[in-house]
Length: 117
Image 1 (cartoon, rainbow, N blue to C red):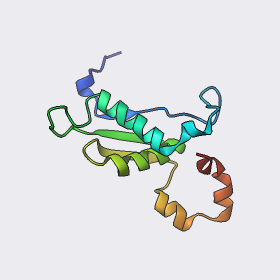
Image 2: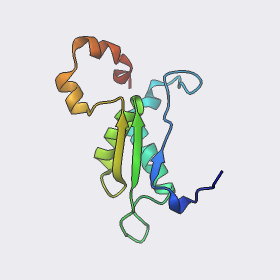
Image 3: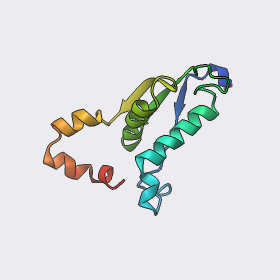
């Protein structure tokens, strides 16, 4: 297997908290989007993709999100902007505005876990 150096990476993938064991948190507050976006920012900055200490703009990352992580990714991209996130890949989670405009009542009930956070 070929090793990959940090310089070769162009994206950041974070496995966020889950509603299913073994990563389920007992405190609902742990799923707060503001807290999760701060976690994403800290990971991006720790990996050197965010703005630099000398004021130079960061090189940004490609953030990938799926399902609940997609909601976190959409929100992080909006809040953190292009200085940290240069690309976004969201799977199985529509943009929040589109979801609110087009989701049926049945879909709202199927997505109950999105509203617990």
